[in-house]
Structures are given as C-alpha cells and as structure tokens.
Length: 592
Image 1 (cartoon, one colour):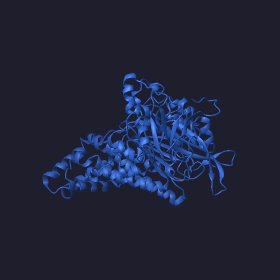
Image 2: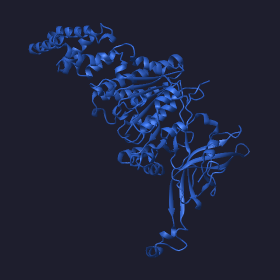
Image 3: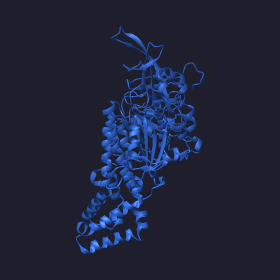
Image 4: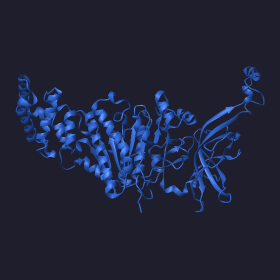
C-alpha cells in the first residue's frame, strides 16, 4: 500500500469496459487482488481537451470511491469443470490464476488544473477515460494537491471508509463573505442508538463554531448535549466540545437550562396554563365550555400585572378571587357546581395556599420570572439572528428533566420549541428586511422525530399537530432568511416527509438497512444499488471486540465536501476525539 514518503501512489486498477462519466468499471491489477479496497479513495490523472479552445489540453485529477468488487473465474462457472472441482477442489493452472476482479468506482470529484501555480478548481468530467488508464490508490499528497486552492476551508470528520486518508469536508456559514456559502440549507443526521450520531454532531458543531458570525442554537430535549457542554461526557468519544468551542474557538457559550430561561410571551403563558391542565386538574373545572371561560377570565386579570412578576402571591390571589366572583354566573350556572368551585378556590386562598402555589402556580409562573442569570428566549433569538453582530453566541437550551423542571416536561418542550420557531421566523425576516443581510444561524434539534413526526393530522393531538405545522413553516420560510436547521433522529420513516424532502445535506450512520428505513434511504440516494450495498456492509459499532476497535461509519450526501460529483454518496469513518483534534486546525475564521 502507500507510505508517507511515496512519491507516486500505487496503481491498484485500470479502467475497464463498460464505463460512464459517473461510474467506472475497473480491473483490479494482480498485485492488489488481496488488498482491502472497498470504500477506498482512488483517483486518476487525465488530460481532457477543450474543443472550443483549439483543443487545449486541461490536466485533470478525478477522485472517487470503490463501492464494490466482483470476482469471476469463467472456468469455474463452466458446468463441464464443476465435477473436476468437486473432486479435486481446484483446476490446475486455472485456480486461482484465472480469477479476475472487477471493481466499481463512483466518481466523487473532478478537479481541473488552473494557471495559478498548479492549483485546481472544480470542473466536469466531460468524457470517459480510455481503457487501461491507471487508477491510483489516493494518498494524502495526491489529495492535497487536488484541493490545494481550498485547503483553508477543509475540515475533517474522519477517514475515507476504505483507507487511512483524511476525508475532506467543508462547513461554510450561511452568510456572504470568503468563508460563506451565501445561503442556508438544512441538514439531517440519522442512525440507530449507538451509531455515533452525537459524536458526529459534536464535531459538526466544532466545525461551524469556527465562524464567529454564525449563531448556533442547540435545542436539547434529552439533555445529552447539555451534559457534554458541562464537561460530563455521555460516551467514550473523548472529545471535549466545551473546551473546543469556548477556549480554542473563543465563542461565547450560553448554557441555558429551562430553569434559567425567562419566558416572555402572554400567548405562551396561556398555552402553558392549558397544557399543564391547570384549570381541570388544579381547579377541578372539567367542562370544555367552563374551562375556556375560566381561562379567559384568568388571563384577563393576569394582564393587569407584569409578566415577570406573576410568580408572586398577589397575582395568584387576585386570579383566585376573580374566578371566585365569576364562578356563580359566568363559569357555572348550576348551583352545586359553582359552590364546589367556590369552596376549592376559597381553600386555596387560605389553608391550601402552599399546596396551590407549589403544585399549580409556581411551575408555570416561575418560568416567566426575571432576574440575574435568566435568559429571555426573545433576546437569545435576537442575539443569534441579528446580522450586524460578528460575535454571535452558541446557545445550548436544555429542555430535559435534568434542567430543573420536571412537571409535564413533554408539554413544556413542545410549547417552547413552537415559540422558538415562531420567533425565528419573525426575527430572521426582520433581519433581512432591515439589514439586507441574512440571519446566518444554525438551529440543531435533537430527537426530531418526536416533534415533527410522520403521519396524518388526525393521528396527532392538537398540541403535536400545531408544533409540527410551526416547525414545517419555519423550515420552509427561514432558509431564505439565512436560518438552517439540523435535525437529529434515530429514524427517517418516523420523520415528516416534507421535512425530510427539505434536507440538503444528510449523514447516515449504522442501523437503517432494514424494512421501510432501507427503502426510504434508497430513495434518498437515488436508487444507487452500489452505494446501498456498501452502506449495508457497515458493522454495528457496538459489536466491536473492544473500545479501541470501534468504528463509526457514515454515508454522506449533499454539499458537505468538495468531493461529491453529481450527488454521489460518499463514505467515511468518523474520528474519535483525539484524532479529531489532531487532524483539524481549531482556530476561528476572521472575515475580511
């Protein structure tokens, strides 16, 4: 194989027939018939000619990956020889000398040489190389030469699946400028539990955090990322994401558990009162009509106070007294019902105050309480999306039970995520209108299948349906304002189809090669059977004999690398923590 000092990579195959401009058949040369080439990066040099420019020759480097190898020996397939093989096991001078191995190479990238000191730029493979063209096992030197013009943007999440070459990627921000892509796009990370999704996302967060003018919001319903950013690693990857983001990249890191978040919207307050079942369980108002009336009267009285002071006793007592006064004629008409409600309200105002305050009042109103160390969602969203800022924060919003709020957390999560999506649409559109620049923000949503599930509307409750619609609207509308969404999920089949179709870059870890998941994955890669066969060869990382031998393979599609050509999937094995830090320059970019 290759060595670090090798001047020329070894020839492992030659172009065979039939071949096309996107997929080449290769004849593996004899010296490498036993080499591990599945998933390996390979390439060849080819001089293309331009018929519109006096047939000027353009030196070109073409890169790709080997997705499969087939071995054939036509004599072993002949029925006349099978009885001999059955008796003697071999055919003299034929076994294995007449074995032929044919590999399939998916074209990954085409780079044409420029007149600028031998640099290369993206080009097109305008034809098919001749049979017999040498195909080389790419080494780092060959790859670096092809990508020299964009080396500053290159970032590495792992090695090529079949060899030890660093797989080149780039992660540009969503704004304009030297290191920007000029528009936002949405990203999907998929794989079963234990496939390495969290480790991959941590590396992606480090990659995007190099852009100080890109805001990053991590919505963490399970608390996994919050633990990681609090230096409490969940797995054994060995990557200290807090040290990288805060110390090496100098980003302002905001860790915001829900207990430290100050909600600031009256409509959200009303939603939380309803979602917590404050009126039916807390106050015993069961009927829909009566409950709606009580909610209307309570909110009307609450608006006489400042929203950040509702946790105090005075607003609570005022609401109870107001409902007590309205109980007889405006909430209930039946004497027994309004007398029961009045007794309950009277009890809470007096001897039952502590129970009412702790169980029903504080869990809601404390979320709107201000003070030192509290973060307002509206302010956080504004800091993330305002285009004039060159030092935006990285915000990790912990919505899990461990964040200090355990009552009806699922309802709370859905209401707050819906509120965030609404504010993102509003703020990002205002940013573009006022500053004529995009919001340049990445929003990461873990456990996405819980919040934008697949299925018809009638299969969802009102709360889930409203959240899904709000997120779908945000995904449709915020991209043009410079807000990209990253959805992390264990399943594709369980994720809303419209969301899935909006994703432009996707990473697929182990565990999606079965049933409906496999069919959906096959659709997303355009029915590429060769790519799917390579994906199906992924080993379960949890089946490794020891921690050191674990591998976390991924298939990637979309604009995540200078390599992909014609949307071809690319394959890599993700780094562990030490290899990630050793192979990347973890310093912030500075826009001119």
